[in-house]
Image 1 (cartoon, one colour):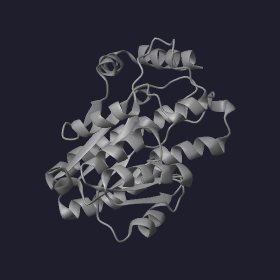
Image 2: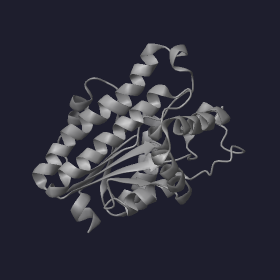
Image 3: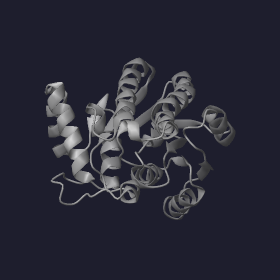
Image 4: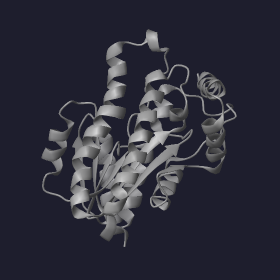
Length: 261
């Protein structure tokens, strides 16, 4: 049933590690072929080899920077002959935590490129094909940080808010066409990207999830859109952040960011 609705291929953007790799493994276990795209070719191939050995499906990889202006053309070149019935956009993790005015503009524009421009181009391209076939699935992985502005994450939080508004709109627009759309909100998750940043996950008082846990909640709740917050503790926090006065919400996100250093 899963493969009939979302196959024969799934494209996972940001599929080289963390939550994206978790999605790739779990989707492949349902018998759906997977195409993995991310910047670094070696981690992509490592995940691909793992899936080939365990799931018995076809796997493609393409080293593509999701912030590139010609993203659509590159994806067409890499996937032009396959039918993509599912898209997981798990990209746009922050690479450093620096006050807005202290960070070079080109770095900020790259964050926008991945979280805003790249997402828009990819969903516009592949969503149209799903609508024509009248079936498919889309999961966009967002962040609790998208619920409010936060210290040293200005453009990141803004980008994640954009992701949520776009995805929730597509949930409504594509629902009559047989396409399931979900905005999956992740909280603090133990990923390689967090480790590279030197983020302190222990001792902050914030519960930490594992990538596979987040991916599984996304697949389990794909039909429960428009938005699902992974982790019961995160859902409780989200209730507060979505109903609190804006000052309280910003203070909550900012104090959390400062505590992680």
